[in-house]
Image (cartoon, rainbow, N blue to C red; front, side, top):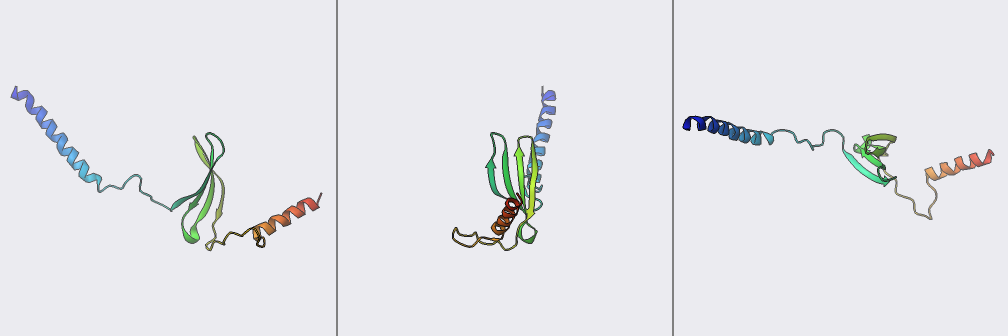
Length: 117
C-alpha cells in the first residue's frame, strides 16, 4: 500500500512547490493591466443607439497630445476624426462676449454659402 501512495505524495509535493514558485514569480512579471504607451483620457462619450457610442479621447500629454473622435460598436472601433490639441487652452467664451475665431469663421462661411445662392 505504501508503494502505491509514494508516487501520489511525490506528485503532490511537486505541485505544491510549483505553486509556490509561480506565486513568487508573479510579483516580478509585468501586469497585464499596466499602461504601456501614451496616456489616454476619455473626454466625453455620447450614446448614439443601443450598441453605438461616439467617444472623444485625448492621447498623450502636453504638446504631443491628440484628440480622437471614435465610433465604438460591439464589433469595432473606428477613428472618425483626429486633431492636435492646443498647448494653451483658451477659456470658454461667455454668452455676452465677442465671438471667438471659430464662431467668426463659421459666420463667414455661412454668409459666403448663403450669399452665393
